[in-house]
Each structure stands twice: as structure tokens, then as C-alpha cells.
Image (cartoon, rainbow, N blue to C red; front, top):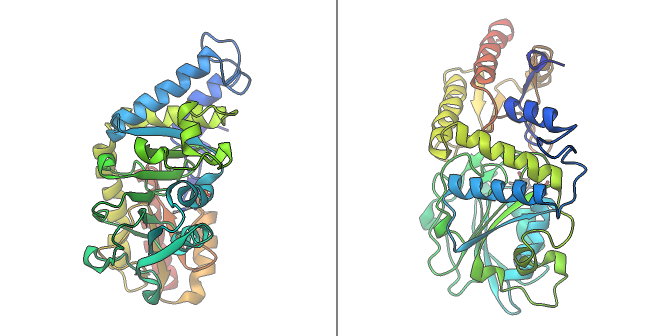
Length: 363
Ligand code: PMP
């Protein structure tokens, strides 16, 4: 298949990857330059893989401005495993963790933490069907909390914190699965940031954790080794065999991001893509955005048709026109256009054209 056969992929994740990354991976699949074997076949303790991992980490550190106070860890188990690892490592017996409830993933994170300690919901927008994130002054933080957990982008309901809240002494823990590296982030002000790679960072299989070094040491030695941040840090993310191919591809995505000009540049493009879609939705009585302005996601644009009876047809005709993956999450229905970093501007233009045409023929 040539790149010209590729359709526009609006999937929420695993999601579209940059074409130059796929092309390079394809070329390297039989043999890495100067290695003579594919990355799928080399030892995770080989020099070649050391270089791949070190370069990926160095490029990420440069892109996101990660200083010496934080470890970069490549783990497995997805963001869902972090829902458990965060409290297992950071929530001591008798401690309290504050959680903001802003969508289904945030609720899952809180439910998992409640298995290990006391969870205090410090803000929730559930009564408004998660159509917005809380304003900073709505947070009721617990003095002395072990940490405050925030989901920076809510993949299902299409909302995003415009700025992350200040949490005082309590470390901020961020599930950034669906917006990591879509815009600059103040890592120094953050205790722990985590996300599965399969939206903005690479393929499924590797989970990125950026953790303040002192927090990584908090987990008890009695924890299983594979679930303790300190062990992963001590072993350079190679306590056991890491997902080598996923880390290799992650590295290619970091290089691609640098080629795009870094996070400030990619944010400009992301804002432009999202604005174009929201303008199309707001400019028509036929469509309706589901997230409240002020909380709208740059990554997952969620919308309904005023006539919901036409939605199945919308998704079906869009798919026939080469616009794939627009069906909203099964728990909320409607439409969702996921437009992560690698999603091309031409695809947004194609969707806007399609929406206009669909309205003309069915409105
Ligand atoms: N958090 C958020 C915000 C997500 O969007 C997802 C996946 N869609 C998850 C957590 C769960 O991620 P994983 O499948 O990697 O466990």
C-alpha cells in the first residue's frame, strides 16, 4: 500500500502515526542501519538498543524540558496500570489522595486508588455530564494530601484543562494519556505525568511515566518489583524485557516532533486544526458541540447532530468518503474526531467539507 492509499484516521487510539515515522520503521524492519538485524530481534541489553532508548529519552527531555529532578520511565500495562501504580507507590497507609472527576477515565483512576487508601473527590463535574473541567477555585484540596490527580484531557467527553491547577505542597499527578506532548507542559511543577503511548507518542505497548525522583522512592520495598517506580528507575526501565519495538517507534516520533519545531510549534498547528473544526460546528445549526467552550479539547472534538437520528448515517457516509473512526465512544454516543499531533491538517479540511456537504444533502 502506498501512502496515497491511506485514509483519514480519526481514531481515539491507537491512532494515526506520522507517515515519515512509518516509512522509516518499514525500512528498518529487515535491518537497522549498521546492525544487520531488525529492532524486533535484538537484545534489550545490546548496545544498539541502549542507544535507541537513550536517544529517545534525550529527545523527550529536550522537547518537554525535563530536568534532572525527574526520571523518565518506559513501562508497560498502559495508563490503566498507572491507575494502580500511582496509589500503590505514593499513597501511604492512612494517607488521603485528592482526585478530580472529569470523565470516565478519571473515575476509573479514582476507583482503583480507593483499593489502596482514602480517596477524596476534590472536584467533580459529573452532575454536568462531564461537559467541562472544574475552574481552579472549585477545587477543595485536602491539607497534607499525598497527591492531587488530574486527567489533563478527557478523551471520551472531549474536554481538556486549559491550564493545570496549582496544588500547593501536594504533588500534581497527571493522566496525560491523550494530550501528552500536544502542547508545552511545565514538568518542573508536576510530580508525576503518565500516559499510554498509543495516541500522541507512538504505538500501544509502552507507557511513559515522568516522575519526580523523590516520589519514585516512596513505594514500599514490599511492592512487586515490576510495580515499583524505584525499581524501574534503578534499572533504566530494563528491570525486565521492555517493549523494544514500541520504544524504538516512540523514539522516531520524538525525532519527528523535533523536526516539526517542538511543542510550541505543534501546539500552534493543533490549535489551528481544532479551531477549524469547532468553527464549523459553531457556525451551523445542524451540528452541536458537546463540551462547554473554555473546556474544549484540542485533541478529541466531540459533537452531535441536532437530529440524532441521522448520526449513524453521518458516520457511515463519512467512512465511505475515507473519513474513518468518527463514531463517539459507546458510553456517550455522538461523534468524536480525534486529531492528535500526527493527524494531518488536510484531514480536518476534508471533514469540514464533508460536514458542509452532509448538511446540504440532509439538512
Ligand atoms: N486515561 C485516558 C485519558 C485515556 O484516554 C485512556 C485510554 N483511552 C486511558 C487512561 C487508558 O489507557 P490504557 O488503555 O493505555 O490503559
